[in-house]
Image (cartoon, rainbow, N blue to C red):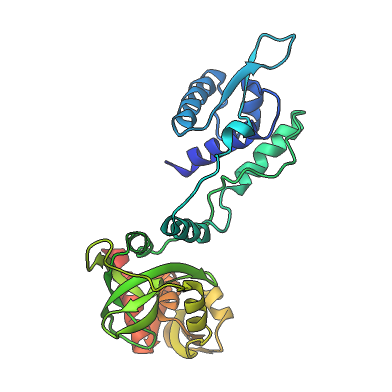
Length: 316
């Protein structure tokens, strides 16, 4: 489902949940972003949206908008929308807790706020009982996130190539994953490292290539009382050593990189030489590679190779 459609359906649900009276099609069209200007096109899209919401179990009621009007309206009652009490097993609670950590920062809150603002402008005052808990939140761009999430869910060991800080070549690691958490904007997986025979934490941005399964589902046992967030917090409390990169940048470019440089010297042939402090090779390599041909990394070697690898990936 596209983001535009997701925003439209979210806005529609919020509108219909946020009012006690039935809303007309015209009010919904004016309040919910994403509908076309043509009323006929709106009606067709609105009918499809209603059916799609009903198919996923969201009850849309139809009723009179006014005793004096024949036009029908639409709403979602909170009593019908709210789920009954749910009793979960311990492993199901763990999965929901893990999911709750992922959906942390609202991406579609702007669509919700806009829909409610338009409702108020149209004279429909939304209920003040709090926003319905339906907002999708934080997403992740790490390719390893999906396979690791599934591995934690299925209690399945994984294997991957990992480039540790200060290393130029990645090493193959086998892990029995216990959980995936986000800390300070970065994603980590913690678990039992089979090769080292001890608990280890790995940052997802340092994983290279695909994550593969290294055993059947159910073959990983998480020790009782394990707190993955505390494991990652303890590991992250020792920040990596700061290093200095020597890079050449084309004159008159890369002003964002220049702001973070500890020194800057004019060089030959229209290139300036910068010294830039850094700690994390994968993250900094992504930043340097984003400048394309305007940046040449001279040292250290592991950072230079990481940038070249990313540029070759773009060309491929």
